[in-house]
Length: 495
Image (tube, rainbow, N blue to C red; front, side, top):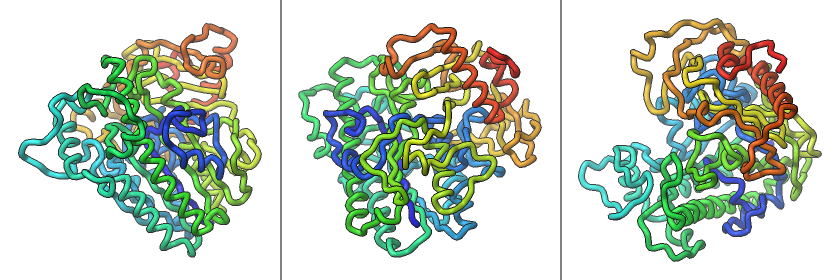
């Protein structure tokens, strides 16, 4: 048996034809839906990039115990478990966060790996002199701090589609599949940073979305409320759509290869994303700083399983790919998940829509703690700005850097959690959060009746049910004791 996992970053469900979008050019996503099962109730777990990838490798949530960071010494990772059983795993990616301090132990879990550079502010090409860019720029690309400057430097070396990191990543993926198609017992993790911002693409993809725009350059929204004109907002959405169409074209090459080599007989194909992205909905851009509305939390997810061969069908079961893929892939290769993995094998769900969970928990370290049952989404806010918040880790890093020495001034050793294999962890004050969730307050939505989340509910009965789901899921994760107080949920409450 073989498996190919195609992963995107910031892929919006509502922009894909299989989920009802009729204006984006994405015929290969429609083609994928004809060959696979499409999940209608797929949700994120930990946010954003590397927290989601820790979930993916370990099959359990990251966000309740720590923020961004490397894999921990006590983590079970499914690629390492596959290796011990004689299954080879290969990673091909252009996602540069794997190669910063806060992601440094992920790629080495795979047997072999390839990396293609140049996205966003990846510190790739060195240039000391002036950097070319348009005269008028709206959004983050116009900020011209060191990070934004590096993005403009990188763009200068990506002038054709063949040079784009996504193109190089998928070309390498196709090469791997071609060379190994007659072999058995391997997994390919094929991942692109696209369509993550900035929304940089070649003109022929932009031409798929003709519109009369004469304004400033705008393909990189800032993380905040929309301040741009309606014309600028629409233009930026179309810039996103252009990158999405490039993602679709590369996906088509994978599907072509499956067809030509008849891989459908013995190769699992999984296509998923870590989270979505807000493109002006609710008057907001981006992710992480606001409540996790459906545009962020409700994700696209597709699976072809050659064992059951279900295709062209939709599934309604509530799933969380970042948690469920580790046990699913392990079971596919005949291995059992470890007792520390909280995700579920989706084989039967793919086959016949069998349920695997009553509710799913998701969130960002320091933000709302959220739970959904597929109909309702409940966003529980911290009770106040200074509610207790700690990191529990043996790998103290931020996104791009190691922690400064002063971060350890109040560090203590915490008792082991149920999943840390008797290892104590370093307990340190978090020092702030990306999201000021306490300012938004607690929110409850019926996302079936109100998919745009325009009308928060005030329903004590429904809230009590969702709180019970939330407390059960927090207990299953062995959430830190103080996190209950943070959200006004003392352990043992019967709210």
